Length: 215
Length: 215
Image 1 (cartoon, chains in turn cyan, red):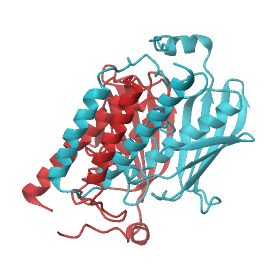
Image 2 (tube, chains in turn purple, green; image 1 turned 120 degrees about the vertical axis):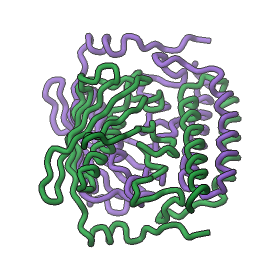
Image 3 (tube, rainbow over the protein chains, first blue to last red; image 1 turned 135 degrees about the vertical axis):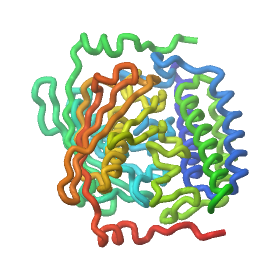
């Protein structure tokens, strides 16, 4: 898939992703009558049937993805097509990864605050971006997360991440979650260790992965 | 809300949650024509409109929840009504929290494997259950996660967590992610530190939270 068709497909995936995220949020907060919930479930089953008519296998990349180009439409943290992603928007400026997102009620752990695991997930992703930007991509081998204050929902957040050390294939990065309104107060911090894969490891882990067949 | 009406509502929330999880999974793997994605988005917008007619405020608990009884229908890891939750099913046996789930393609990080942040999220949740079971509930202050091998998707997983130390309000717990097929091989491990809140902290953090008004 390429050119205009690819652009249109990515737009459509994003539009469906936006709709899914809004649906998930409304399903989390709705106090509609119980009968309405059952009706919604039935209508969703109709959509499922049609989307499910043609699905890719688990070792086949999406036609809209560009793995080596870093485009992963369904990544569960940053993917515009993922219902699980806030999504986190990340840009890299002078080696620092800067992320922005607002977490809805669907991400609630303790009442009114984000689930602790959600913060770890956001940090794992943004640390990875800083690591890739340093030219030493790798997989997470350790993520040490410190929770200093609860992360508020429905509040614009600002995340940052930087590489601190590169030792051969081993890269260490640190990151912070704060609010946009008070970026100097760290709510959650993390230190991550990433290790670049050797060619034989890449082959063993991902040798099965294939690009989609051209139609 | 109570009695039969509450039972029915929780069943309906679970049915809608099941439909949402299947929808999210199909939306992640679909290779349906681009026009079908746009049609699905439009149909989902109709469902959103009706669910959105009556929603709770962000400081109001769901009518179907029982906070003190530990029932959180929309928890993003274990909630039967959450589209974000695999969901992880947890039981506590002799103080050990045992969790089971299978992660779909929506949880993919590197091709064919779970996102590292998802593993941290599952572990944060199950460590919390072990901590609560020990009679010393608290909030996560630190979660140190070690990644030993990638976690496969579409594969039954088995998680365990145990409390290792209780020091006043400070509780330490450890947990493991393995597969059901090979429970002795740790894929991801975590050590978490949890601290019980003082009454003044509970009031400061959650004083605003209210139960829903009776209809």
